[in-house]
Structures are given as structure tokens and as C-alpha cells.
Amino acid sequence: MQLTKNLRVSSFQIITGSFLGIILLGAFMLMLPVSSVDGVWTPFGDALFTSTSAVCVTGLVVQDTFRYWSLFGRLIILFLIQIGGLGTITLAVVATVLAGRKVSLFQRSILRDAVSADQVGGIARFALFILSGTLTVEFLGAAALFPVFLKKYPLPRSLFYSLFHSVSAFCNAGFDLMGEEQPFSSLTGFTGSIPVNLIIMSLIVLGGLGFRTWEDIRANKLRLHKYRLQTKMILVTTAVLIFLPAIAFFIIEYPGLPLRERVLASLFQSVTTRTAGFNTTDYAQFTESGKLLSIILMLIGGSPGSTAGGMKTTTIAVLLLNAHGTFRHRDEASAFSRRISDQTVKIAATIFALYLGLFTLSAIIISLAESLPLLTCMFEAASAIGTVGLTLGITPQLSSLSRAILVFLMYFGRVGGLTLIYAAVPSQRMRNQRLPLENVAVG
Image (tube, rainbow, N blue to C red):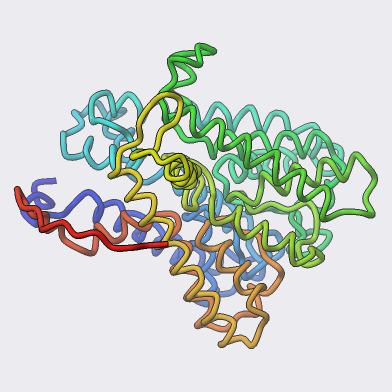
């Protein structure tokens, strides 16, 4: 730790570096012959893509997880998903606490940045809360899934499948082991299964709410008026982004499905498109309207400090509230009788522009390189940068250039655009200096 201080390594550089280190270690482990079913060395490109997708809890794959990877390889993927979902810094702090060592102020500061906390006070207890809460929810999810899988598979496989899919769902990863019947099939065999749909959706939503939201709900229970503004915005925005798109999917897609399956499929796609990566229907059969709606949801993603990626629900909420304030001729954005700072609006606008610009540029490059329709490439790019994992089936056939772009997008989406920029660009604040003000006409 003294070395990092001497080298003036920032918390943002440590966060980005730790994710990169785990990705490279995971790629090396997946390259080993013991990791593949056939016992052969896996090409570095395939191993790196899979490791990045697992650590960045995305779910995009170039090899079917069941058919290509051995039990050892699947275990490596499972551990990478868990590490990526919890965050390397959170696990490091937990290990320090469990070892009985004091967590330094520098470590607390890094964890605060990693989990989007407000302050360093109580951050070590918060790390323990994250770990215990995560393991509890994943265990309950696995227990709920076990009876369903036991009807189809032998006992040992049912136990592993239940745990694997519970962790994958809570961490919003989207990796699955359903390739035995058909490769890359995800959960399409459970379209009408009420238990599987409800359990997986619940795990996805819980993982995507954010650990600070959990803490707020635990502390204040049903006393909604005591919730922080961020918690209220997350809960309202999440509910809107679940039910309104579900209604749209119900109207636009699935005209041939029975009513029960149509309702389940609409709700599931509305939930999973915001960074989970599972699918119960074939996205390649979607209309262009359905694909475009899915792209928008993938870019929005989950909430800050969660296992989900994307621009985040609060980013979109702040921008919409700012637009509402502008329409009402108000100087500041507000919600629930609270003002939102101009700095927060500025950061939200920056994140929106950053994601939209990088997503669009990447989709154009992939479209030109692969001679594929732009909307198809936009779907794949949005899935990567939003760490979703949904695909129209083109990922395994992409060239090395396009795969490299997707790898970068997944890393960018999981680490966070501003975190990556703050790590690369040193801070150069102008202290006590303000440039002359001049208005510019917009709109």
C-alpha cells in the first residue's frame, strides 16, 4: 500500500487495474487444456473474450458454455462471475476485515469509489453487508431453482445448475448451461415455466437495484419517506422500466404465443434486457421495433453500485428530470421535494454522451468490418457496453477486430466510463479560478 502511495496511484487506476488483472488471470486459466471438454488448449482470443464477459458480468460468448467448457472451466467462469459481480475491491476489503487487519483510509476511499458510496465512514461494514447479502440471496435463489432442475437432471447436476444460474442471474451475467439440447439456447426451454421466470427475474432485479439501495431498505423498512433520494429514484425508475417496456413487448412481439407465455415472455425480456443476458425467446425473430426497444433498455442498464452495467437508471432519471425542469422554466432539476445539483446533471449528461458516442461508433465499425446490417451491430454493441449478453447470434462468427471491440466495450461498461477516464487522465482542477461567463444559444 505504501508503494501505491509513493507512485501516486489513484483509486480509479486501482479499480480499473484490478478488473484487468482478474480478466487476464481468468483468460490464462481458461486457456489450459483442463478447462475444455476436449482437453485442448483454448486460443487466447476465445479465452480472453470469455473471461472478459464473465468478469464484466456480460454473458456474450464465442463458445457454448456447456458444450465447450469442462467442469473445471465452468467453475472458473462461475468464480469470475462472482468476483465481477461483487467487485475485486469489495472482496479485498472483506478479506482484510476477516483476517483481523485494519482497513486503511486509502482502502476505504477506493471501496467508496468502487461501490458509489457517499462517504468512507462505515464502508468496511458495508463491504461485509454486500458479501453476506449476496451469498444469502444467491443461496435462496439456488434453493428455489433446485426443484425445477431436479425434474430434468440428475441430483449432482441439478445442484450445480441451480447454483450456477442463481449466481449468474443475481450478478446479471447471463451465462447459462442449457446448451445440452441446443447450443446457445439460454432459457428458451423455459418460456412457459412460471417458477424459472419469476425466480430468475427476481434475482436479476435484486442484483440490479444496487447495494446502497439494499442498505437503505434494510434500515428504513417500509418508511418510504425516510429513503434517500437516490433510493426513491432507483425504485421508481426500475418499476417504470420493467412494466412499460413489458407492455410494449406484449403488443409488438409474441403474437403466436398463448396468453400465459406471452405475459411471462414480455416481462422477462423487459427485465433481462437491462444487463442480465438471459433470454426465453429468440431475439433474432424480433421485429425491428422490438430490437430497437431492447437496445435502449440495454444502454440504460441497472442502478449505481449494483452488479449491473449500462448508463444506470439514475443517469436517465436525472436527465429526464432536468428536461422536465427546463420545460417548467425552473433553474434546477428536482424530485421528491429535493433539488438535484448542477454537478450531478453535468455528470449524467457526460455519461450519456460518452456511452451513446462509443456505442454508435463501435456499431458502425463492426457493421463495416463484417458487412452486417447496422441495427444488428447496434444490438451487439449495446449488449456489450451495457454488459447485457443478449445477442442476435452473430458473436461467434465475428472477426478478431469486432471481438476486440466488444471486449473493450464490456470492460468499459463494467468498470464505468468516468472511472476509466479518471484513471487515464490526471486531475487538473483550476483552484479558485473562474473563466469569464458568456451565453451560447442552444436548441
